[in-house]
Image (cartoon, rainbow, N blue to C red; front, side, top):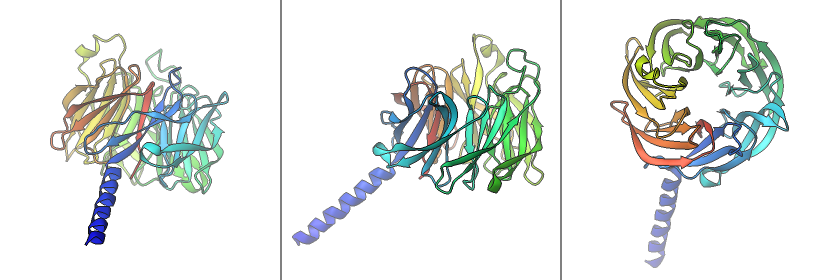
Length: 377
């Protein structure tokens, strides 16, 4: 009897430990080159309560602003500067939860200044980065272990648009692949275009494939596809808008169907500095969110299920300053907003029926956070 009771207790303890572990989601935080920051930070999100643990340093590197995850879920890539050189760095993820850390694999120079964004193709064979200052896109091949092999291309953009201070030259700001992995998209703030490239992932090569045209002065920054892959949502950094595109996956072409203001112009006019920063699509596909710097809010949009067009639901204060980035957890129940100027990450619950955000009374210190990346389970 005693032996049976002891076994029962042991089973309960194991079950409780597994349940506790499953409720903790690993969160990786990329930071700016601020003197306060030591590199890439790590914390966990309790998926039941939405509470964050205290972020700790996972890897030391200067300015690891944006991060990307390999499909193997055990390799992380970051932009940044190592030894005075602008690089894309590869890291192996060791451990989970509070014990997770990053071990350096290697790095490759970008070839054209510091990178603003980085992505990995869906086969895990190619990495692409966007150099805002250099006006270029770099392509890298990968080894079987996820480490960087070599830079295979450096593509220079050309041209400009109407806003003198920000659009006198090209400024690629984001890179990402189509749902079917056939194309790479690069919103270029300086050109008012989303540049499209055909992707040869096996050989880590890009071929020009046209562009999606934004309205003059929009300043395209970041972009996300809708859940069904039929729409693309592009953030206009300069005029704080979102433009909805119909996307033809067969031809790899984009057609704009709507532009909507994220913040009313009268409210923007009160701010000394204002710009959009990040855009995300809810896992359900029913909602889209964009972040507004200066106004320091996140705008929630409802998605029309037929047309894909947006209507504003609400604007929620981020409980911080300069929301450079935010992200939704894989379940879509929680949103984490990174305040670059306030050095904070705040937690919000997401109403699954209305899309509205509610502050979760939880905010943690993170030095100059500008990227929030969830570790896939």
